[in-house]
Length: 248
Image (tube, rainbow, N blue to C red):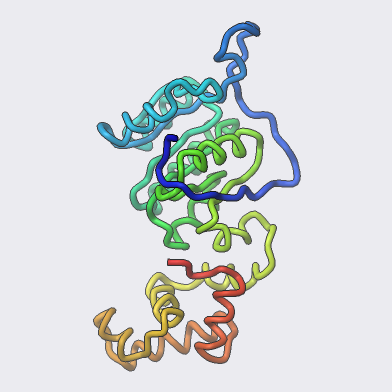
């Protein structure tokens, strides 16, 4: 079995179905008819060739091109008009989000799926706000990736199980949305503090880990609790567990 690892994921569905961009050549005997066309964005070498190899021989998907950068992907996508752009991103940032947004503007019928090892909630949320339709972490199985591509090609959104709780508010499909939106509004430093609090670290430990004063750590702690509308760390931990927030 082709695999990145072997775990299961779950799609989050939109209320409506959309028609994907497919290869339609009218030849019913052609195994590539009605195939989902994919452009891969990945660094040249092992990553790109590995993804190409994983898709080889699967009639449902057809890799119609590859690009090593966002600008190159935009030029290629405008030329070949794929159903999906699969972006292998080591560490998503604002430039990645900007490129996703530009892809969506220039190629509105093309959907973006992000493949990344970075699950930091701010980066993941920024990808979806920019217009990404799917997010899969690299520790998931190849079957999970194909499930994501299949779901997105059919007009749905997809997040794997590890990031589902963080992104539910973006899809408007989960309870606890207010807490997740509040979490998304924290600064990166205060989000780090929130993670450490959930992990059971006290202000002194947080101060040492972040190379800040204990007073500053305590100020961040108070700000996090206030922002998430909880009275103490125990309340924060319950909130995180209930809404699947702050997953490592």
